[in-house]
Amino acid sequence: MNSYSNIQKISAAGDPFWDRTEEAGMSGIIAKHLGNGLMASSEKEFINMCSYSYLGLDSNPKIVEGSMAALRNTGVLNSSTSRVRIKLPLLEEVESSLSDLFSLNVLTTSSCASAASAVLPLLAAGFFTEGKSPLMVFDRAAHFCLSLMKPVCADETQVVTAPHNDLDFLEECCRKNSRVAYVADGVYSTGGIAKIKELTALQDRYGLFVLYDEAHGLSIRGRNGRGVVLETMGGLNAQTMIVTSLNKGFGGSGGAIFFDNTIKRSSLLRFGGPLSWSQRINTAGLGAILASAQIHATDEINILQKRLAGNIKNFDELIPTAAVGDGLPIRLIPMVDEGHAISAAANLMSQGFYTSPLFYPVVPKSMPGLRIMLRANLEEADLVRFCAAVRSVF
Image (cartoon, rainbow, N blue to C red; front, side, top):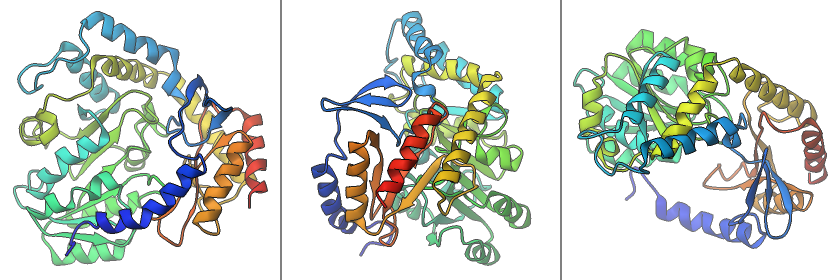
């Protein structure tokens, strides 16, 4: 019955493990933020090893002040009107700043997920492929916010799911279809990376269109923090769009769509669902984005990237995993089974480190483990202590 989603099945399979995780005190935690990844619940202080703030910008004083200054200067939290009809000067300033920073066109959204829901139906309808609906090929490991749109896309065109990073499958699709669009993560949320160079070659050979979710790749690498995809490609081409988060590595708020001059901004705004609704990044969030963009335009971003790279290298030396050497901040530490993952996480919490136990459907049934995220502002001594703690739970 389910051609494009299996929510009932995955919820039935995943609920018992979520219940066990909550019973072990590893989800639903209420904690104060003390800075640099240190948090405090009612029971204890702990270091958050699952923070998406890869460069530690979430508590950067310049970004916090930028947020408050924007709120003071505009005198309103939300404009509460569709941006297609009326928008604040601050929104125009933020998107122009981001466009200049990354040398492409930018539209901001309330989240990366809303960016995906704005772009994917238009892609399926042929808005970006000369009016011809492409075969939509979703990577099996594509983020949930992308895969959630499969039924909507399937109302416009044919949708198939490809084995993860299987370029042979994708090339066969390109041979058999005049237009193909591939939907994937640039950096996957449980670790790993898209085969960006090889995908670019398929673009050159077949005119393949690629939509990347770069939520975990922005800021951590590249000139001005332009991200893993753009740094690998050398820039944006006419056959690529990117949706991304501005509140992970970037340290701001909301999400964004990156596109080139061949795509009409007006089409995105008028028909891109969430882009024309009244919900968007509020003025405090816009101020945070503007302040972060200013940081990204200076050498400070290079310093933070080097610190992050150093912490990744140190971790890989102390705890080798299958992802060793990829230079990315996400690591999945395999465990024997789901129970082991939960008990190991609880043990680490007792030693002052929060990690995230992963199980199906977040990861395949055969790959339970602990997900950790490395940060630029993680102190070396804390990293060494954490790695020793991890070794103790194997």
